[in-house]
Amino acid sequence: MVIPCHTKEVLMGTRQRAVMSLSLSPDTAKEYKEIAKTEGKTISGLFREMFFFYKQEKLKKEFFALQDYGVEKAKELNISEEEIERLIFAGR
Image (spheres, helix red, strand yellow):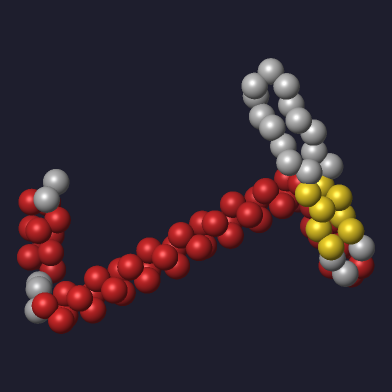
């Protein structure tokens, strides 16, 4: 089943929308519509919210990966937490 994301271009400089469509199994499409209805959202509104949460999770993963990298580098260089803070604030 294809769920069209009906959008329109809003004039007067407020917002512009792109039209997209998703291909889902009938069961998934039905469940998606039920979730949107239960949440009091449009199909497009639910997608925007899901996409926002996806981006937030991706940013968290990137942050934790960088944090892990920093921990490993600090261990390699034998740098203490206090020295790291001093170096960070000295560079600002």
